[in-house]
Each structure stands twice: as C-alpha cells, then as structure tokens.
Image 1 (cartoon, rainbow, N blue to C red):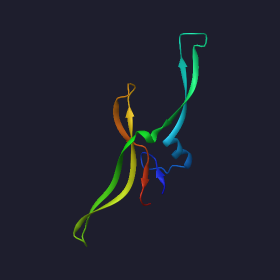
Image 2: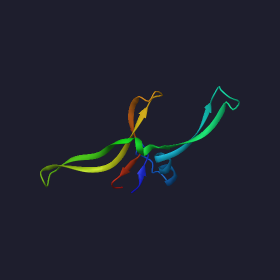
Image 3: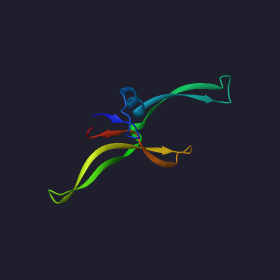
Image 4: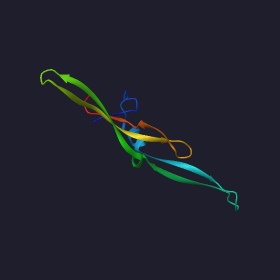
Length: 102
C-alpha cells in the first residue's frame, strides 16, 4: 500500500519513507580540556521507538439499507511526539499516512 506525507497529499517514494523512519546525523562535540578540544561522532536516530500512538482516519456514515451507523477506515498514521529542547512533550504529529484504499 502507498504511503503519503504528513499532510496526506503527496505520495512518498522509497527514499523519503526510509528517511522518515531512521536516519543518521553527524554531531560536533566541543570540549575545553586537552589538546584535542573538539570531535565528531555519528548518531543514529530510530524514530519508530518513539511512536506510541496511531491516528485513525475514518468516515462515519448512516447505512440506510442496513439501518445502522457504519465506519470506513480510510488511513492510519503513526504519531510522532515532538519535544522541546529540554525534552518536554510539545505535541504529536503524523509521521506519514497509509491509506487503506486509493
């Protein structure tokens, strides 16, 4: 099934999908002691560890033939927690949308 961006309007290619789930970053470390006062390291981020909630996108409608309320699941989105600089929770945002039908 295809995956769509966080606004559910653009289809993601394979590279974009991989970069959403896991990525690496180079971090510069500055130290004041010793002759080698700076260094670099590569930090690997695995975002799937931080996914704790899913958002379900649904269409609710009255089925006149069956005389009951029906629900159609349109998409599922893993919700990513966004934190401030001190590590405090700010809000959640959809990482991507996976539609159940086209």
